[in-house]
Length: 160
Image (cartoon, rainbow, N blue to C red; front, side, top):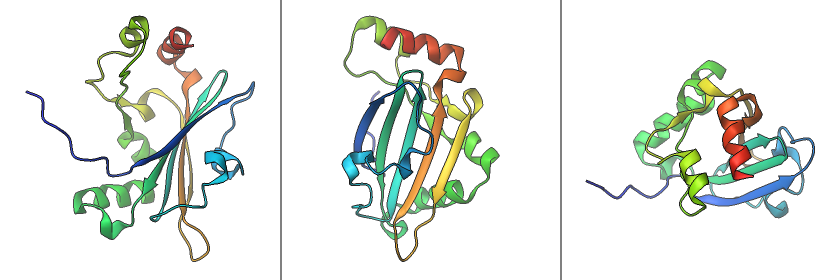
C-alpha cells in the first residue's frame, strides 16, 4: 500500500552540475554557486550536498527553515545532526537513490529507490558547517566523495 509522504521539510532551491577536471571541495565558498544567489536565502540557511564526481560536481541546495517553523521531530533531528560529531553525522546521513525518468539501464543500475544508502558507511564525507550569525545565514555543506566507492563508480559509468 502506497501512502503519500509529507512535504519535504527542506525545499530544494536548485541543482547545479559543474564539469571540471578537479571536483571542488567546500563549494559553498565559491561565489558562483546557485547562480550567485546563495546569500539571498530565506529561512535560516542552506543545506548543500556536494557530490564530488570524477568529471566534476553535482550540487543540490536545500532551504533550511527556522527551527520554530519545523515540525518538532524534524527540529530535534536537525539540531542533533548539525551539532553532532563526524561519527554521529556519518551514521545518520542517508540518501534514497531514485531515477524517476531515464533510460532503463540507468534505472536498473540505481535500483528501485526502496532502500536508503548510508552515505557515511560507504563513502567518505566531509562537513563544512557555518552556523548562522547576525551577519549571515547558516550554510551546511556535506561533500560526498563518490569516486571512493567501486559500486558508485560503476553506476556513474552507466549514467555518464
